[in-house]
Amino acid sequence: MYHLQKFRFGKARWFLFFAALLSFSYCTTDLPTKPTDGTKQAIADSLMIVTSHPLAVEAGLEIYRQGGNLFDALVGVQFALAVVYPRAGNLGGGGFAVIRTEDGSVVTQDHREIAPKAAFREMYLDSLGEVVDGLSLRGHLANGVPGTVAGLLDIYKDFGGEVDLQTVLAPAIRLAENGFLVSEVEAERLNRFQDQFRKYSTRPNPFSQKKDWTVGDRLVQPKLAKVLKAIAEKGKSGFYQGWVADSIVAEMNRGGGIITYEDLENYRPVYREPIAFDVDEFKVFSMPPPSSGGVLLQQMFHFIDEGNLCCEDGWDSESAHLLIEASRVAFALRAEHMGDPDFMKFTTDQLTHPARLDSLWHFFDPERVGEGQLFIEKDMVLPETWETTHTSIADGKGNAVALTTTLNSNYGNKVVVGGAGFFLNNEMDDFSILPGLPNQFGLLGSEINAVAPGKKMLSSMTPTIVDRDGELHMVIGSPGGPTIISAVFQVMLRDFLFDMNPYENIQKSRFHQQAFPEETRIEENAFFREVMVELREKGHDFSEIERMAVVKMIKRTLEGKLKGAGDERNPDDHAQGTNSCCDF
Ligand code: GLY
Image 1 (cartoon, rainbow, N blue to C red):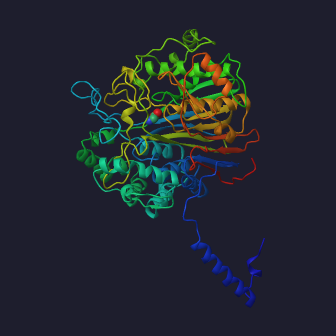
Image 2: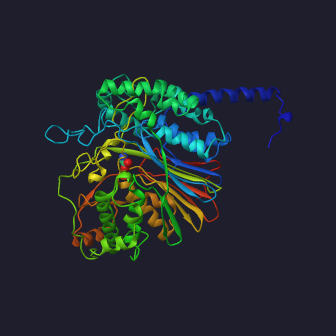
C-alpha cells in the first residue's frame, strides 16, 4: 500500500510521470474499438447478475455500488438492455418476473402485453377467413399494449427505492446519449432486418442510419434518451401519458395501428402467486399463466417422477424417450388448455393435479412414440428468427429475481416509434390468430388463446427460482420461444440429478419436443449416435436446429457463493458480480 505524503516528484520522478502520461495517452488512442464478448462465468458473494449484454450488467453493478439494492440494480439492468440490446431489451414489449425476497417469500409479476381494446378475433384474417400473411408479425397491427415500463417501475416502487429513480436510469440514459459499440451479433441482426425497419417504420430511426453495421460501430439513440429521461422524471406517466404516449398514438395513426391513449393509460402489471412444487429437496417457483412455462415444468417433472434417468454425460435411450414423451404430452396440453388465465376452463391446480396428470400419462409406452396426437396435421411453419432476453440476479441475503422480457421476434414488429426511438413488440402473434393454425414458433393453440380485447396472449417464458431446504438455490431463465421451457427444464433436471457446475450444464446440447410437429428438434450432439438409433427404432423423428434457448443462471453454492453462468450460444451473454472472481 502506498502513502500519498511519501510521494514526491524529484527530477527522475517527473521523467517517469511524463513517460507514464505518454504511455497512458498512447493507451487511450489504443483503446479497443470493438466490444469484447461477455464473460460466461463468475462467482461472487454479495451480488451476481447474468444477462445478455456486459454493459447492462455494468449498469446494475453501478447502481448497486451507489447504494441501490438488488431490485434497483435489476431495474437499471432492464432499462440498459432496452438501449444496448435493442433486438429484445425493450420499452415497447413485456415480460414476467419471479421475485424472491430475503425472508423466503416468492411472488411473480406479470407485465405481459395485452391486446388493445379495439382488437378482435378475426383481425388477422381476410374476407375469406384466411390468415393475412405477416399481419400479426410485422407492422402496426402486430403489437400489444406494452407492459415493460409499468412492470419495472412497480418493481422499483414495491421492492427497490434505496436510490432515486434518476440514479436507476442514469446508466441507460448515458448509454443512449453517448452511444455504445455494437457487438458482432447485433451488427449482423441490424443488417439482416434493415429492409424491414425501413418498410415498417414511418419516420427515420437510428437503426437504419447505416446500411452495413459492423462490430464496433457506435449506435447513438438521442430520442430514446429523451424517453428514458421522461420516465426518470415522471415515472409511469412519463411513458403512458404525455409526449411519449402522443408519439405512440401518432405512430399508430400513421401506420394503421389500434393502440389508443386509453389502452396506454389503463395498462397495469399484475402480481400473481407462483406455480410452486417440490422435486425432492428442491422447491420450484415459476411463472403461472398467461405464461405456460411454470405449468409445463410442473407437468414434466411429474411425468418423469418414476423414471430411472441416466446419465450425466448424456441421456441413455430410455431416459431420452421418457423426457421427449413427457414434453410431447405437456405441450399438447398447452395447446388445448392454456391462455390468459381469465379465459381458461381449467385452473392451474387442475392442469397440474397429480391424478389428472397420471390419467393422461397412462398412454405412455416405454417402447414407442405416443399415439394420440390431438391435432389436425398442418404444414409446419418455419420460425422467423425470434428473440427474447432474460436476466438472473441474486444477492448474498437471499433476494433474487428471474426476469424474462421480450419484443417476441427480433426487434418486435420492426416499427420504431417516431420521435421516441424504441421498437414495438409483435406479441399479438402469440395469440392463436386462427385457432388450429400454428404461429411463428409452430405452436398450436385453441379458442382459449384466440384474440380478444384486453386479453393476454399465451407465453412460453419461464423465469424460475429454486430453493433448496428453504435457502435460495437457483435463478434461471432464457429467451427462445417454446424452446425456453425445454432448456430450463433440462438444465434444472441435470442440476437436480447430477449437481452439475452451472456453466458446464448450460453449454450441454439440448432437445425440444412440442407435440406439433411430431419430430423432436435437436442441437448437435444432443444425443449419442447409438441413442439416436434406438430412439428411431421407437418411432422418433428428429430435425437438427443450430441454436435453441440461451440460458442465464445463478446457482448458490452450499457455502453461500453465487455462481453466475451465461450461455456460449450468445457471445454477448455476461455474468459478473460485485466482487466477482475467477475461482470456479
Ligand atoms: N413471445 C414469446 C413468448 O412469450 O413465449
